[in-house]
Image (cartoon, rainbow, N blue to C red; front, side, top):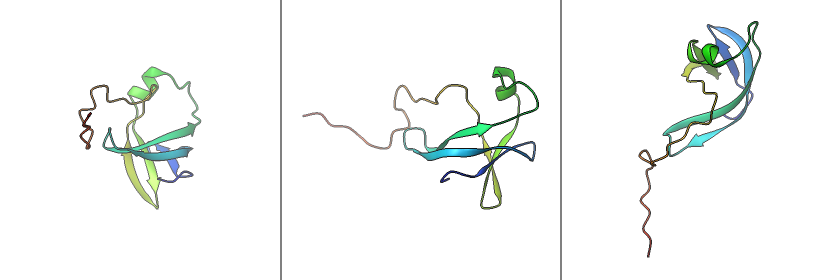
Length: 84
């Protein structure tokens, strides 16, 4: 993702990716999205709906979060840190 991709909810465009990048400690792409919906977007809406990101015509399943995804133990980190 680069930004500008469509955010889909049940196949209908409801927003767009505003910023994106790769989160090495999470093992995947992350994006900040701007969405609009006919109903209030709250915790229940985010947790119980299906979202996709349309990248070059291909829909990729997306997990929505109200808080920033975080790997507190760095269990998915691919680098080893050595302190001397």
